[in-house]
Amino acid sequence: MSARPRELPIRLIDGAAPTRGPGAHDHADHAFESGGRTAVPSPPTARVFVRGEPISETAIAQEMQHHPALRPEDSWRAAAEALVVRRLLQLEAQRLELDGAALAEPGEPAEEAATRVLLGPVMQEVTPATREACLHYFENHRERFRAPDRIRLRHILLGAAPDDIDARLAQRNDAESVITELQTHPERFTEFALRHSACPSKDDGGELGWIERGQTTPEFERQVLRLKPGLAGLPVESRFGFHVVEVEELQRGEPLAFEHVAHDIATRLELTQRHLLMRQYVQTLMTRYQVEGLDVAS
Image 1 (cartoon, one colour):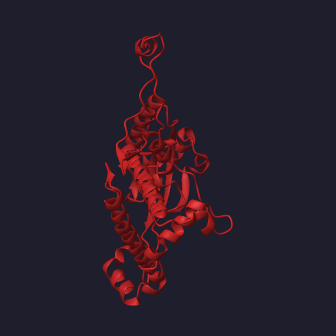
Image 2 (cartoon, helix red, strand yellow):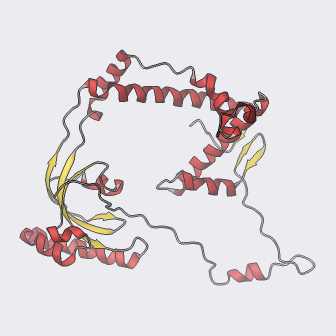
Image 3 (cartoon, one colour):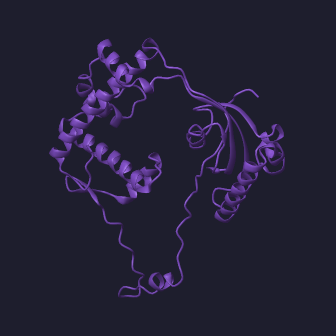
């Protein structure tokens, strides 16, 4: 079976929209001000301020969609940082009287033009990475520079929708039962795949062929690429359900020569410079405009 990109899983369960619990109407329907008007809830209290001006929680909530993270608090922080930095750059552009509309190139928004001009002197401080610096980095991080590992495996997918908690619990139990049975009767893997798998690969006995990093969904490959040859002792969870996985062969990537990765290392080192310079610049702006409630440079 030839290797090709596949959509394979890990658990992604969308949070349900908040609902009003029993008795919630008592507060909403019976809260009246004088004159019989319904009381209007106060907006969420701001936690982050730039020069005494609040960054609204509503704006942060809207920005969070651009900063997905496993933990909501990490997404909130990234969104808040982005809005703080944007506001700092706006204030500095105003202080320097940068006219974004006049500076804009064709099709470039005025704010982006002002930011580009504002950050120009900062980014000019980035120096090209020397060959010696790249070689030093290579020698100290050799384990990072290998050809991709690849793994040949077969699986049995016990499918369940990501938001169906009861079904997922049941399928996990079933997957564990299948693993227990296969530990005693490994020759039945193809049979079980045909009978139980929700993946089209069941017609090939669950065979997925060779998989390299980047060919499947990140969460699935993150788990299977850590497995050793043989039947996995626990199910592998994905957004599609639970997988009974058997690793048939594992090939570790060969070390790469310096010349193959020198350009990537130079890019990495220069990006690191950019990041450090930007942090220093933002820290200066934070001091100038008094940011409260968030340490952007951390």
